[in-house]
Length: 138
Image (spheres, rainbow, N blue to C red):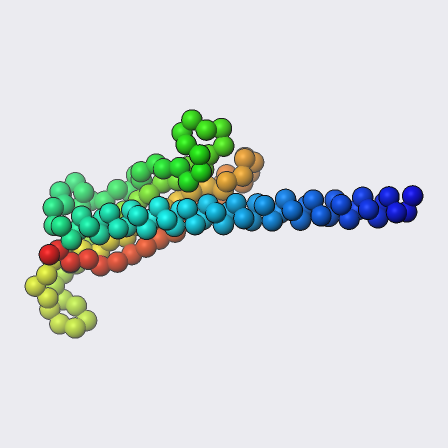
């Protein structure tokens, strides 16, 4: 009887540890996917800035965000939606090293997503990653 109790307690502990590890690995996977999407979005806008053909409406930024899915898709039961944002700021010609004749634009991109868990209480947790750089028009 004592052996059954000891084995039961140890098996419950083992299962709880496995579930916790699975959740941690899934959170890491989603964070890496968010970083990947953010890097791709940043590279897209860096190319647009370097090209020099940015409209006035694009210069105002996108503070409402573009919806993407880090896990699943719009029709999936299990999905992790995220939003990508960007903000562009014209910088003046004065730098720490003197003046420059190039047009410089500060690019800030960020992504936000909610917790991947299906629990209602965990959806209140928002995660965010940000990137910021200064680009010149060529």
